[in-house]
Every structure is written in C-alpha cells, then in structure tokens.
Image (cartoon, rainbow, N blue to C red; front, side):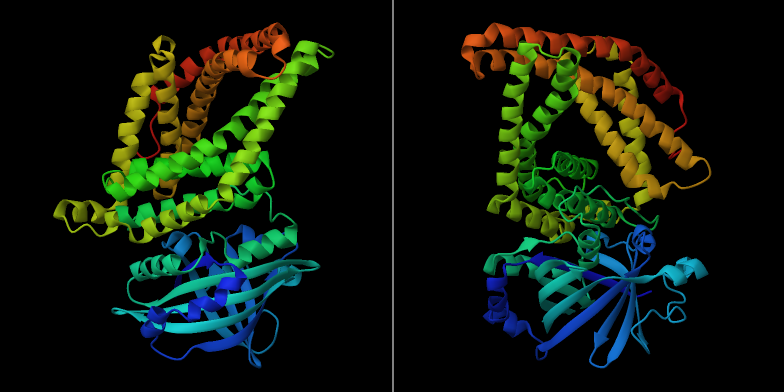
Length: 517
C-alpha cells in the first residue's frame, strides 16, 4: 500500500520566493524545478461521511487529465507525517468507484453513498516543486501558494511541503530544521483537506478535539512515541486560531493537548531523557503557564460565581466578585492570545515536531538506548499501564488521609493514566477489552473530578486573600471576602457529597480486571 510521508510548514507569502533562492537548497537539487497550477476538487456527502471515517477523495486536474486520489488517516503509522494514499488516472471530473477498489474508499462506497457524494470544496494552488537528494534519500520540496474555496468562503494557502519519495523519514525533519533557520516558518498541523472541511462547515476558528491514536502491534516504542506525540501536537496546534479569537473551549483544548503531550513524554521517558528533551519540556511548561489564567478564571466564573449569582440575584457582594473575576478572566484570555501569536510559541511547536522526527533521543548510538527504541510496543504498554495503575490504586485507597499536595500529585497521576489508556487502547482491542477500557476511564474520571473539586477549594483559599487584598474596589473588601466565603462553602458541600463516590471508584479500580490483561 503506498504511503505518503510529509511535513507542512506555514510561511508568510512575502517570504515564499526566498526559499527557492537558498544557495544550499539549490545545491541539493537533483533536477530542475517544476511549476504547475493544481486545481483539486474534494468530494464527500452533505454530512461528511468520508471525513468522519478518516478518508478523503480528491480529483486533481493535471493538464488535460484527471487524477483521482484516495487518502486515509489514522492507520498508517507515520502519524502526522504520513497517510496511506492511492492514485489512479480517471476519464472524467467525477469520482470513479471502480478505480477505488482495494482502497480505503471501497468499503464505504455503498449505493447510497455513491448517490449522495458531491463536490464540497476545492483548492487552487500554484506549486513550485524541487526534487532533492539528501544522502541516500530522495525528497520533494513544494512551495505552495493559492487558496481553498468553499462556496463564498476562502482561505489563503502559503506553505512549504516536504515529501519523502525514497529513503529515511528522518531526512524530512532535518531539512525542515535547516529551512526554519533560514526563513520564518511555522509548523502547520492541518492538511489542506482538514482546512477545507473546516472552511466548508464555517468552523475554521472553532475548537479542535483530539483524534484517536492508532498504533499497530508491530510498532516499536520509538515509532509509537512519534505517532502519539505528533497527534498530541496536532491537537495542541490546531487550536491556535480558537485561542486567538478568545474561545474558552479552544484554550481548554490546547491545554488538553499540552497535557497529553507532556504525559506522552513522561510515558516514554526511558527513551527521551536528554538535555534536548528537557528543553522541550521547559517550553511546554511555559505555554501551560500562559494558558492557565484564562481557563482557570473562566471555570471559576462559569462554574462557581455565576451559579451563586443566579441563586442570590441582586446580592451586591456576588456581583462585585463576579465583575472582578471577569476582568481577570479577560486579562487571562489576552495573555493566552499574546502567547500563541508570539515567535516563542511558533518556534516551540516547530521544535517539538522536529524533536519528534529527528531528536537526539531517536539517534543515540548507545546500545541500551537502541534496544529501548527497538522494543515492541505491546509489552512496553502492558508494563507502563500495570505500573501506573498499581500506583494509583495504592494512593487512592488512602484518599481521605492525603494532604493537599499528595492529592494534587494523585490527580496528576490519574490524568496521566487516563491519557496512557487512550494512547494504547488500539493495541488491546480483543473481546471484552474495549468494555473494560471504557469502565476504567469512567472510574478514573470520577476520581479525577473529586480531586479536582478538592483542588478548586485550595485555589479558592489562595484566591480569597489575593482578591480581597489586591483586587478592585479596596474599600469593599469585606463584601468580596463574604462572597468568596459563600463560593468556598458551596465547594465544600459539593466535595462532601461526592467523596463517597470517589472511595467506591477507588475500590472498583482495585478489584477490576484491567483491559490490557
């Protein structure tokens, strides 16, 4: 099955021409540059059935001929760097389902789908393609400019695409790194079809959720880290537009992507524990800190202060607290927006992509490191899940006796275990395993929610003094202190009502057979 392995880099339109002029890049060229206008039409049903199944169907005009391309995500193994791909010449500008036999489209091509399929958007791209030789590998560098068109909506395209034609995929990351040192580029997490669908649905600035991670049992730990890490990075970076427009859920989803990525690095720490990895972790912590105030204050306002205001309409104390918190939330959103618009953020996302593709962790010649990278993923996943779940069971059994710091550490451990179950779920898809995985996630969620309520109480206590002493309207400190007391009181009631459920969940966690067993 053909497999496309590539990376995309956004670049300002004014910098596009400078790429082809790079002297060192011209020296790598193995043939003349080719220029062409590519018009591609993407087909789907009105409800985007193909997209929802991870399949895209494209017809591209090449001169007077049409080429039909079917691509499939999620089952290949190159993560964000790769997709399965099938190409066939066709006679006309409409889908040829006979040519799609033995592709990912074939099982979906029912009579109903064939009747309902139609053009949904198109791309118009002016491309300059340069063949390159990197050691023993052959690459193609494409400089693309143009637009995606969906009805009256348009989105500009200005990017560099590096595709592996033959050889070592590591060369893609190496070349991207050199280009990043010469011209201002940023990692592009979304393919043109993904951007086209978002444009078609009018959701280009809407929050993006995580996609399932698909691993194969024959993967090594190194391959699995790349696939998992790149999906987490896609989840993080795909929410950049939503954060810029002040979408609360966009901030939340970027934070989830960050947590998942940091959890993945933790899961695979025996592979990646060098200085370069430490630098990546430092930058991820920085971005986490920039996003935290927006989300924390938004949750505080919507889940604690607003319900209290509704229950006590007209209470000046609550209104005063709410105005103070909303101002802090707005400042948090401004800080998050500034972060994702910064050069540091753009460099962070690109550096993580390059680290996953060609980091020092992936090439350390030490025999022990090589053996760890080559280890089959299934026994590794089994070991990780067993060790982490046993630790959670031991700590959760003492939940009522843990202090605030210990509860916080337990909550972090539960989150990491939840993410690890999602990372490795596809490896354990036997009879009953999916049901057990679902029960485990539900149990962990109960524990996480209760510990989250406990954490909120600690945050309220910390905020109380800060708000009362440093907030707006210093002459009305007693009123704000009274309102904070009411918020804290409601949190205490919620905790006491749910701690029993947490203890039951802890018992289920200890007694249940785990899905990887």
